[in-house]
Length: 257
Image 1: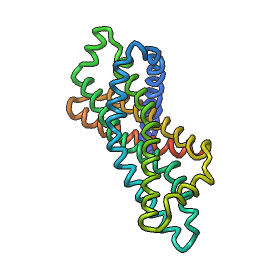
Image 2 (image 1 turned 135 degrees about the vertical axis):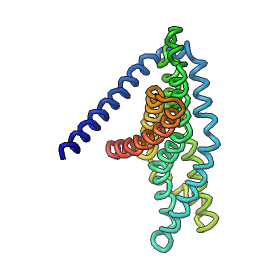
Image 3 (image 1 turned 90 degrees about the vertical axis):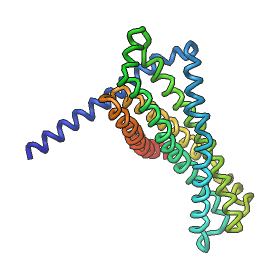
Image 4 (image 1 turned 135 degrees about the horizontal axis):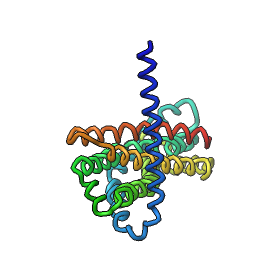
């Protein structure tokens, strides 16, 4: 029993210490954002690599997410509620949950693992030490551009995913359940409120972007033990980011709704 208590104590202390390290990294990142104009080439590169190049993958995910949402929504409403409710139920579900959460999870796997592996490789090959020797701050040149890129691009990608998913769901209803596209959007428009339907989704995307960018960089910076450490960093970047995405989803939903 005593060994179990000691184990729980050590794990709790380590968890608190890790959370502290993440917040310290966040503070340092915020401090270096003021150099955005001077380092704009680094930021533009990360905006393109982490955001623009992810549009095809996000679009494919959004198409199938919208198709599933449309099919399930129409199937559940069939013989239970009038078709005019189809747009309300499906659209709100896409905007509030499916759009931001699925997009963030996909980017946690794509961008989070990539960031973690890149920075971990630089860490274990002593490239970060070389930057410090040359008086180049690794937080400013490696972490800040990636975190800011995720904060900016994730909400934009969520908007793209939401639009694609909504149109796909409307087309599924029209093609298979005789619910016209016009009826879908008229139904949704009748209950649409920006502050209740879109703003919470964007707040979630913002928190998801911070989580993915910051945690992935933190995992990479603490990597050790050569190639094994790089592989572990890539896995941890996705797993921890995905966990925080779900935690943030619950927290934002509780605060907003």
